[in-house]
Image (cartoon, rainbow over all chains, first blue to last red; front, side, top):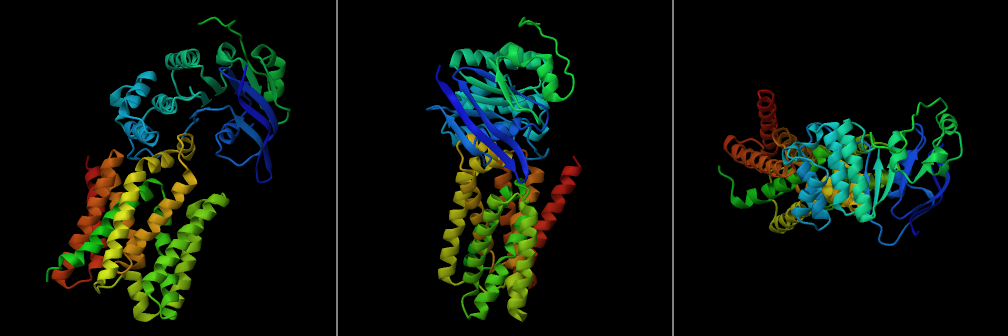
Length: 235
Length: 255
């Protein structure tokens, strides 16, 4: 299968601190790559390097025609910023030369009510804002979606809906998904490969059954990790 | 004495540009930076006067260089821009006040009541229209980049270029108000109506129009009342703008 992303000896450093060192991996088209690792292991930094928001050494090669959607983990916004959800999505539409039907489609996809998006974005709940960010990312009709903990602050039914939707999009649109998550069950269910970043160890890459073993997880996090495999069944 | 239309034209056009540019300055949390940045005109004015050149041209050149400097520092370093701007431009104010003296210093700081010539008016009006047009045209890009520069990038916005265009727009807006309001007060006309509009608005478009409208209203009232009461229009304009801000805060806290 053709790779939609090839990363070759990617390194990022902030001053004296080496965040990523010689990271090499490839992502086949339509795959779901989960990225796991303890806090500070460079997961978000990796995403930001991939979208070109950080200086790095090494190479990041996107497949021809790749369109990237990015769902950041959180944004530092003031509560009284006079920007409504609709302002935000409409601005995306104008910049991309789209019309308002694309905004409605995006809202529909992430099931956000019109009343919610008329509120300033700083006043939305964590889950509502997360869905707004996802809708924003989907408006560009991405072929690759980078999600940084997309369900942080989302309640459980919402989380289930979100992953079901992502999965559907993947099947329908051959979307490639890069997912930072701490939820090992989710990773087990959806990921085709897992990239683990660690503070002390070399990064590892492999299918979930190989990477998500208690021994490996303990090594990576430096502490025992509780993990009960759900055998891929839907709870 | 009622002011003539031609005496109002340039300050009002500058107020529209100030209101629009200020909206994004306030939303981008660069109010302090914005105010300090207007001070950079002073060494330019001082140097121009020393060399017997045109003070306004000196101010404009210094402002454009200042915008370029902030932009470069933002691109190259990780120091918060508020800190950079605060230090560099307070120093500019200090150096500028040593270069300028007496009457000239007061005029540079607080503006003068002399009417601009016709060439200056035409250039000023064209510049104000260009800045206002640029901000309105780029408002969607500016909005995305203020919510998140990363998201703006993934939407195809060249954030570095947008930042430079915005900073230059800001610098030229300050330049527009140099004759009428001076270095110290033009920063205030950019910030105060926008801060007021922010208090009263829940969406971006409302804020942009409210900010421009309030800036125009404050400027017109400042000049007209100044004419009646024999007071300088510039400081009166800022006083009116500050009264609007106070009223908006009262209005919001009463809700």
